[in-house]
Structure formats: structure tokens, C-alpha cells
Image (tube, rainbow, N blue to C red; front, side):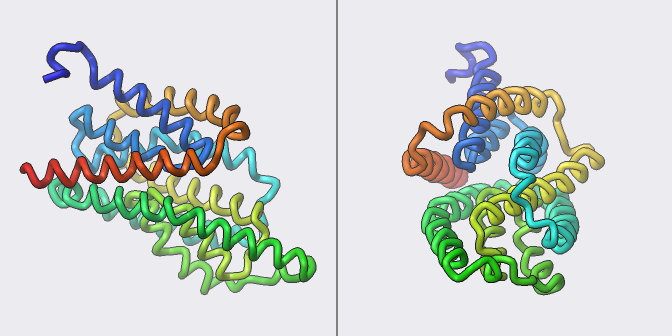
Length: 267
């Protein structure tokens, strides 16, 4: 095998995949489609690989929150925080109590579903932008209509559960739910999406750390290089074609999903 002829090839791939994941997350999102399989490639069991990957990529999400905090509609933070706290912990707990074999069987389906969500997010974003434009044409009052706490919280719960359990593509589901509840300004939608995803992954991260599900040796490697990739990606984002980036993420996700389907068929 290749790994027997090239020393530390798995570490090299983890470094490269983490850096690329950081770049992709900063520019388009979907970097976990690469970093999670790389973590599995280190021989980490599937549940711990997902937990370690979530922790490794979280600091980059926090940096995005600081960058976008000025666009957050603070009146919506109570239901968002409540849903992310409950849903994120619940998803993380269910993950930790899922058998390794069961989660491994779910991996290709989760990656494929996340990839399809990401692929269709372009259409969703167009719809959201059209709603945002329509809201501006009608006046500011349409964009700041009050949103009921309980219905929004209950609608976000399953999305936040999914983020705590696996997460890929969850951000676009958050934007869709918020848009259905009348949040129509695109910058507000994106900022709330980043906050919700960051908080859901934060409580999941804390759950993974407290329960000892994180393999810190691999986590710190991925965290450092994902952060470096995120820094570079932030500088490249404005000069790159969103359509090209989206195509790269979708192709990568479908390829990874196909690989895991193939591995399961062999075993």
C-alpha cells in the first residue's frame, strides 16, 4: 500500500485536507466534506472522527461570527440561542450513543445529503436574495416584522440537532427557516446563520470535550492548518468565482460519498 512506502502519508493528507477545508469554509462552506474523511483516514473511529473534526473547525466559525456581528438582528437571538443550545447538545449526545458500525453506515448518506443541500443552496440563496430585494422595495417595515419566539425555536430545533449530530449543509437550512419566518435581509440572514451554526457547534464541541470524545493530537493538527487555510481563503474569497467554488465542493462531496458507499459494498 502507498502508506507503507511513504512515511506519515496520512499525516500529510490530514494537513492538506484541513488546510483546504479551511479555505473552502472561508470562501463557500462545506470544508468538512474533506476534513472528516481525512480524520477517518487517520484510523480514528467514525464517531470520534466526527467529534474531533467538529472541534477542529469550530474556531474558524467563531472568527466568522466576530466578522459579521454587526449584521445580527439581536431581537432574534433568544429563540436562536435556545434552539441551538438544546438541539446542538441533543445531536451531540445522540452521536456519542450511536454505535460505530451504525454511524459508519450513515456516513455516506450524511455526506451525500449534506452535499445535495449545499448544491441546492445556490437556488435557495437566489430565492432569499429575491425576498430581500422585495422587502427593500416595500420598505423597511417588511424587513423588521416581529417573529414569534416559540414557533421559530421549534422550527430551528431539528436543524440544530442535525448540526450537533453531523452538520454539513445545516447552515443553509437555518437560512431557509429564518426566511420562512420573515427574516428577509440577506446580510441579517447570513449573520444569523453563522451565529446559529457556531453556537450549535459550540455546545456540541463542549459535549464532545467533556465526554472525552476528542482525539486532541489529530484535532490540534487539523485546527492549526484549518485556521491557516481560513486566513488564506478569506483573502481569496472576493477574487474567486462562487460558482466554481460551489462546483468544487459538490464534486468533492459526491466523490467522498461514492467512496464510502464503495467501501461499505466491499465490507
